[in-house]
Image (cartoon, rainbow, N blue to C red; front, side):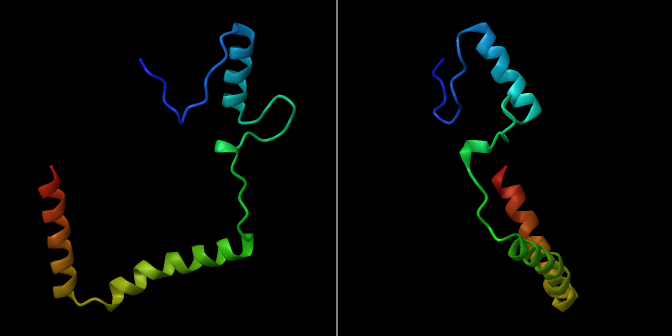
Length: 87
């Protein structure tokens, strides 16, 4: 079976394999550094992330309050039809 390009290859040596499994389970390398997914470093501003989360939590409620019952039913009906059509 072909290996996936997105998955890192596991070592053949049983000792190194056990080490990599333990590192995956605890979420950090044995030298104490964090184990990042695909070596990606989060460079976003934490204050901006917090502000966007505040706005996102208000957005859905504000949109729902602004919709009339008739328009809300039309949106729900089209969403249900789209779900059933995919299957």
